Length: 476
Image 1 (tube, rainbow, N blue to C red):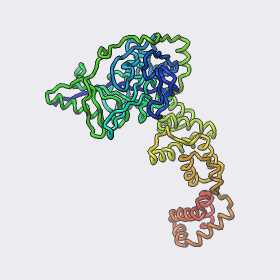
Image 2 (cartoon, rainbow, N blue to C red; image 1 turned 180 degrees about the vertical axis):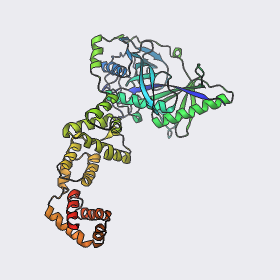
Image 3 (cartoon, helix red, strand yellow; image 1 turned 120 degrees about the horizontal axis):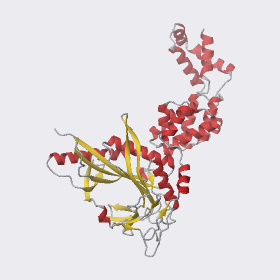
Image 4 (cartoon, rainbow, N blue to C red; image 1 turned 90 degrees about the horizontal axis):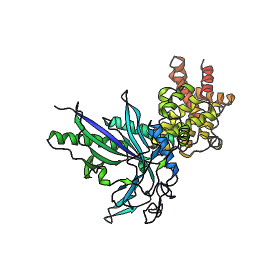
C-alpha cells in the first residue's frame, strides 16, 4: 500500500493594529453600524487618491525583523485586478513584484522535534469589505467598513507536513505579532486568517502534487480538521485513479467537509501592474535601525529571563509567556510586590482555573496588576488567610475590585486574637470527644477535622497555623 506525505504552505492575513486605514483616515475599529467606517477613498470613488499610512510600513518591518526576514528597502505597491462585490474599486492595492519582507523563517517544535518553517515573503495590502448573506430576505448585503483596513500577508514556504506543525507555526506566529503589538490577532474578529495550500505526494517523491487552497480559516480547531479532511479527500481521489484539481475550496466545519468554490487563479489572472497612484517606498538605513532598536523582548527570550531572573520553573514560564496579557500582568505585579513565585502561583493556579471555567481567553483578563499585588500584600501581612484570599480573588478576577476595600467592607480580616480563638477551640474540643479520642489514639486525620470545625465557626477568618498550635496544646 502506498504511503503519502502531506505538503502544506500557509498564507496568513493579519489585520494591523493601526488607528486608521492604510490609505485614508477612517477608523479601523472593529464593529460599528454597517458602512459607517468608510469614506470616498476606501470605497473607491472616482477621482480619489490614496495616502500611505506610515505606521503600516513600520508594523510590516517589525514583523519582518521578528521573523528573520530580509527587509526590501526599496519596495512598491501593485494593483491586483478582480471583481467581487466586497471590493468596490474592482482592484486591490497589494505587493507582488517587490514585497517589503522576504526570505525569513521561524523555528517550531512538535513532539520534541524542531524545524524551521521558511517565510517566502511578507507583503502589505488593503483588506476588502464583508458580504453578509441574509437567509430571511434571500439576499446578500455588503458592509464596506473593513475596506482599506491594513493587512500584512505572511506567505510561508511549503515546509509543513502535518496539522500539528501548522498549528505550532500559527501559534508561534500569533504570539510574535501580539508581543510586537502589530495586531491583536483576534481570530473571531478576523484579525488573523489563514489560507491553507495543501497537496499530497508519495513518500520519497520530489515533485509536489496538485494543490488546493482553503481560504479565510479563522479557528485553529477548524484549520486542523480542514487539513485532515482535505488530506483524506486527495488521497481517496488518487487511490481511485482520479486527479486532484487545482481549485479554491470552502471548508464547512459544521459538516466536516469542503466544497469547491472556483478554479484557482494564477498571478496573470489578476493582471498585476504597478500602482500608479502611490510612489515607491524607500526605507532609509536610519529608519530601519530605528525600527530594529524598538523591537520588544519576544516570548523565547522572555521565558529564559523568567527562569533565570525570577527562578520560575520552565513549565510555569512557558504558560505565563504563552499570552502577552499574562506576561504583562506577571511583570507589572512583580514590579509592585517583588514576590515573583507568589505572583506566578496565582496566575498558574487560580487564574488558569477561572479562565477555564469561564471559557475566557487570557487576552480578555480584566483584573489589574495593582489589585493582584494588593491581594498578595493582604496575605503577606497576615490580614487574610489563603482560603479567604481565593474567595476575594474570584471577585477581583470577575470585577477587578480593590481587594483591600472588599475585605474591609465584608469583614473578612483574619482574627488574630489568640484569647478569643482559644475560647472557640476549647468549645470545639469539648463538643467533639470522639475526634479528641481518635487523635490521642494516633489518628492524625482527626486533627484536620477539628481544624475544619474551628474554621467553620470562625467563618474562615482565622489563621490555620494558630489553630493548629492551640489545638495541639489543648490535646497534648
